[in-house]
Image (cartoon, rainbow, N blue to C red; front, side):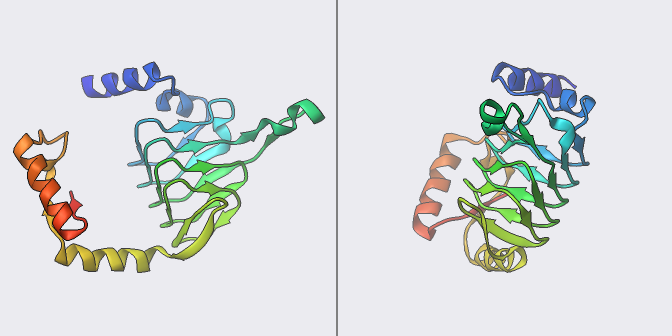
Amino acid sequence: MFDRFRATLRYRLRGYSDPSRLVRDGLVLGRNVYLAPGVVIDPYHCWLVSIGDNTTLAPDVYVLAHDASTKRGLGYTKIGQVTVGSGVFIGSGSLLLPGTRIGDGSIIAAGSVVRGEIPAGALAGGNPVKVIGQAGDYLDRQRALLAERPRFGREYTVWGGVTPERKEEMRRAVAESGGAFIE
């Protein structure tokens, strides 16, 4: 309970909206959703946003259900639904614009600007976002690399209390192998 309070306090101090408040205001948030630090979900139109079960939004993802570019010229702000399916991964620094629909099991690359439809199981990235493959194919390639590259457990993370020696061990392994994996 204290960890949740501390995380909520950190979130508020950084100027981001409290997820529990957004849910009270109408955000549809599935089970087991991970919102990394810096995620911003449109606090002014959160009831137009839904995020499915087992989905991850990496650090600094923005989800906007409104576009105020028309406000001065037309007197109205454009709004649209944003629907993120289940089992989706949204990479760090991505921007989801009004009218976005991301299908179940999709992966959105870091730094992408997403508007429109991303089919289920797609691997998509870019600005503007384009489907560049299938999430399953990408995961198969990573699974093959997982079999040959170094792996590290939770004890190599900040949350697991990584030591300076383990940091150095990881640094060497990543440099020698060109990459690694961590739990």
